Length: 239
Ligand code: SAM
Image (tube, rainbow, N blue to C red):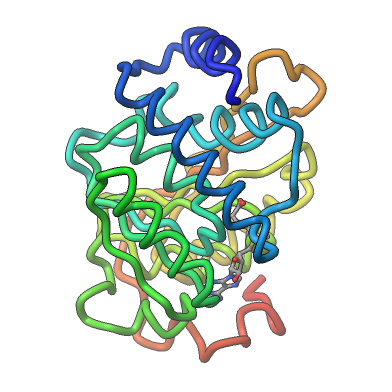
C-alpha cells in the first residue's frame, strides 16, 4: 500500500497543490506499475517510500517553482514508465501532456495506465530525433521535460526542437550538472536556446540528493539541420 502520508506531507513541504483525486490516482498508478513490473522490466523496483521520493516528488519539482503555466502543452521526452510526465499530469490534469518514448512496451503501458486513471494525454512511440522533425510536434510545445535520458548537451538536441519560441526545456539533473554547463550552453546556442540557469530542486527528507533542474529558454528557431538523425546526438554531442 502506498504511504499516503509520505506523499501528501512531501507535496506540502514542496508547496505543490493537490487534491484527493490526485492522491487516489497516485495510489492507482503505483498499483498498475506493480502489476506490470511482475511481467516486464518497467522500472527498478524500489521500496514504497523511495518510490514516492524518487519518482513522484522528484517529478513534481517544476510545479514547486511555477514553471508550468495553466493549460501548457508539454512533452516528456524519454518518459520510460511515465516520469516525470505522469506525476505532473496527475497533479495538473489541465496540462496537455505528450508522452514520448522509443520503446513501444513503455508506451503501451502508459496508454493502459492513462485509460485506467481516467486521464487524457497523447502518447508517441518514436525516437525524439524523428518526432521533432514531424510538423505536428516541431516547435509545438510550451515546455519539454526530460529526466535521466542523456547528458545535458545531448538533451538540448532531444528537447529544444520541440519547444516553441518563448517556451522552456526543463532537464532533471544531479549534483554533477555544473560540469555539464559549458557544453549545455554551447548546444543550446546552436539549437535556438539560451540556458536560463540551474535551480535546486530538493526532494523533502532527502537532503543528500542535491537534485536540480536545468532550465533553457527557447529564444530563437531551431535550424532545420537539427535534430540530427537518430543516434547522432548521442554519438557526437554538439558541444
Ligand atoms: N524518464 C524516465 C525516468 O526518469 O524514470 C525514464 C528514464 S530511462 C533511463 C530512459 C528512457 O529514455 C528509456 O525509456 C528510453 O527508451 C528513452 N530514450 C532514450 N533515448 C531516446 C530517444 N532518442 N528518443 C526517445 N526515447 C529515448
